[in-house]
Amino acid sequence: MKHRSAPLAAVAAGAALLAAATAAHADPVPVSNGSFDSPHLASSYRNVYGNSTEITGWTTTGSGVDLYSASLCEHPAGTQCIDLNREYSPGGIERTLTVTPGSTVTITFDSTRSPYGSCNTWYGGNVPFTVGVDGEEPKTIDPPRRTSNRPPDWTPQTYTFVATKDTYTLSFTSLPETSSRCGAALTNVRATEEPNDTDPINMVAPDVAAAATAVTGAVWLLIRRARRRRAS
Image (cartoon, rainbow, N blue to C red; front, top):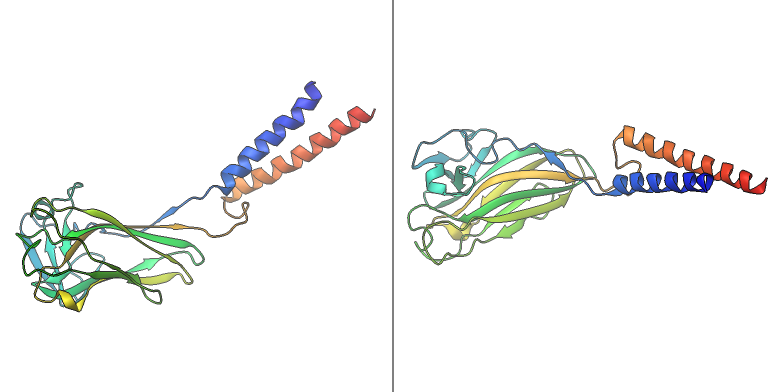
């Protein structure tokens, strides 16, 4: 019985290791200043005009954005945020994203209608914006109106694409129909990537892959020995 249990234990160990190897795993992609906390504002807000790098790690586009203090954003994490319409004029913001070709990249962020004053009801209409990367179809998001002005209803959003190169420009852009209105607000931008390789040995670190190969060899060796014992 002892001789028969050894191969079975090895098989179980090998199966467990390979199962761990095939489990999907997502790695973080660096997105510095994803909560727009630099530069820090003690209170209120600041106009940031288009083509500016004043917000660390980002470049503003179109008419620019309004940078809001944490107290004005009222985000549960206590972060700052931006309004994609600078003084009611459509703008945007973008940055470079470095990823692994072949991976599935997921951008995650929080959005709401502008938390400034009574922007939830000012001027009426929707406040759609797009999130996307160069060469891929963007996604349009339109934060819904709230039932009251405060607090803002921050909602998690995602945007996913499959990387075919290692560098992309990630952009958030307010659409033209938002002119003369407060825009959408966003914060807490982050990203992850997940490999698409279906080969379990290639989906894990080299040391784990080597261990899986060694276990597989040991399993077959123990099975052969067990068969020889039974034959004798």
